[in-house]
Length: 349
View (spheres, rainbow, N blue to C red):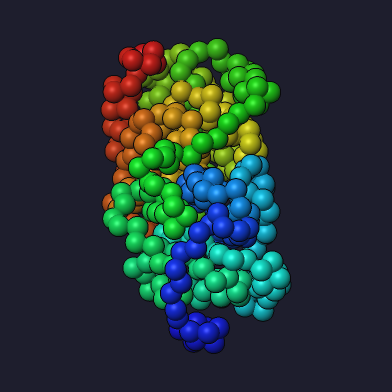
């Protein structure tokens, strides 16, 4: 709390009339691409709340490129978390931008850590907005009670309420679009794998070690896809470090493995019929296009499952890590249930 008192101490501020004059607003989302995707509609709603709002995003190196594609973001500031000394240039830039309001989008954890507090306070913004009920939430001059949402998407949506947004009047599923050229390229990719349907995309890579599912466990699951849906076109996607394994898994099931950019993966997901993935950004992309998804999740992480998306989530027995608490047999059983529930109506079987 020393940081808070050093910058002027705790206080509360009344919410202004955002249409009364120009307001410059910053949204803190310096973490993963998936975190930004589930925040997209909150950002869009804030920007839509008033034509007087300029909305900037404090992004991470990981999600900055994607952030720059969002039409409702005016400026993207890239921030890499490190030592306090290394963060000084970001603090100075925040102060120089003279933000009226700053919003803490890192609401998934039970405390506002000191690095986040420093960013909020360094901005000099009068309105510091964030989800209340967490340790160090006195840093917010506009605390937001998010209630008890069942999804992280809905928790993010609560951050739009200080801007006059009525939650029940919007659809909070992320909205992504493909250009005609992007869709055509994705269709060509799938056609190169096989003309059969359904198109099944299996992602085996994650950026966070907690979400890793042992790579050799995917083999029986992909084999089950081929058994249940013999005509399927199977695409296995992976980060470069996992490409050799992806190639072997795909070859064993008569599929194909590709090393794709995030934009290419997005297009492949959007044109797929079924996606299987650990709880990563790919699951949230599938949510944006309402592609049926089998999500591999850690214990007690239902709030991070793809939001209002066909398919199902299968949960492991350990909250801190996906491996070894998720047996292959459980995933195969969940795959069978997904095919049984959706397969006939969608022409998979």
